[in-house]
Image 1 (tube, helix red, strand yellow):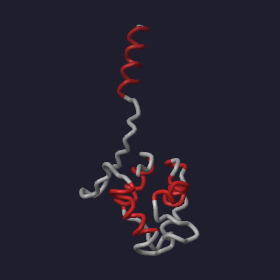
Image 2 (cartoon, helix red, strand yellow; image 1 turned 30 degrees about the vertical axis):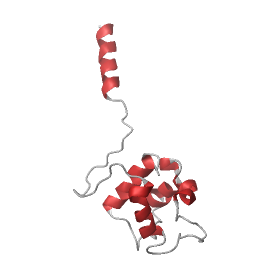
Image 3 (cartoon, helix red, strand yellow; image 1 turned 60 degrees about the horizontal axis):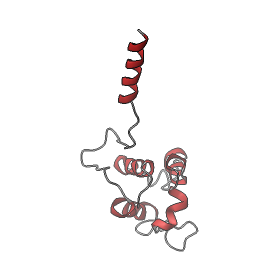
Image 4 (cartoon, one colour; image 1 turned 120 degrees about the horizontal axis):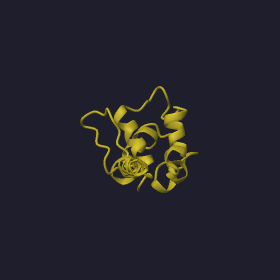
Length: 120
C-alpha cells in the first residue's frame, strides 16, 4: 500500500512540474507571444505606447527614459516584481490609463516577456 502511494505521488510530481514557459490563453488568433525579445517585438511596443513614437513621455532625455534596453533595466528586472509589472498590471496607471490602455494581445506580450526574464 505504501509503495503504491509513493509511486502515485512520484508520478503526480513528475507530470505536475512547473513549465517555465508562459502560455497565455484566450488570445486573438493572430497574437503571437512566442520568442518575444526587446529587439524583435517589445521595443516597438514600448516606443509606441510609452515613448518616441506616440506620447514622448519616456523618450531619451526624459525624467524616466525608456528609449533603450539599457535604460529599461531598472524597470523590467524581476518579472512580477518589476516596476513595469506594477504599473501596467497592479496599479494600472500605465500607459496613461485609461486613455491609452493596452489591447489584450499587447498586454499578454508584456506579461510573457516579463515573466520570461525580459530578454533583449
